[in-house]
Amino acid sequence: MPAQTSALAPASHPVMARAASGDMPLAELLSQAQALQAAGDTAGAEALYAAWIAHSASPLQHVALFNRGTLLTALERRDEAIAVYLRAIELDPGYPDALEDYAELLFMVGRVEESSRETEKLVKLDPLFIIAWVRMRDVVIAQDRRADIARLTPMLRSTFPDSTLGWY
Image 1 (cartoon, rainbow, N blue to C red):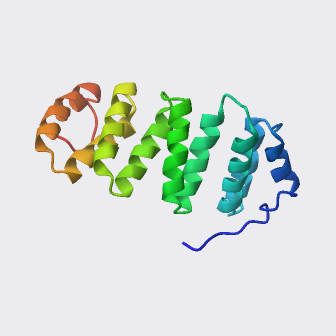
Image 2 (tube, rainbow, N blue to C red):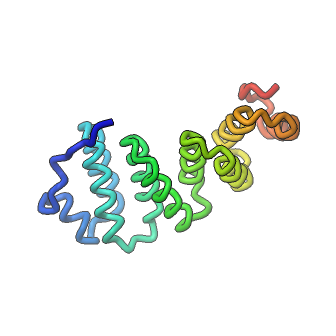
């Protein structure tokens, strides 16, 4: 994917300057970034998150880091996305969305064993987070780990008796 440019890129842009001031509330950041994404400016939204993260002392930085990770993934800047997801998880190890996207990205880049470990953490964190089971299924099928499939299928059936994840 070619590098995307943004009209928001200059630090002198009022929205970017506000994000870099450290005074922008998270809700405003989310709203501004979403508007940029809706206008097709993924790079601008990512840059806005980066500026805010660099200058904010918010205890909710993990949310902005997670959102930035999704944008970096969309921009195919996967190594950066991995680092950003790790930082989000470091700040809030119980944030399932960051852990799930991190595990998914590891799987996408061929780091299947690491993805497997992260997915198991996710299942332990929240056994009812169904996407974790989908991720686990993808990993064990990709590695043809039949013993794990046999071990996990009864757990899945007892947790989600009406599930159609395809393990039956």
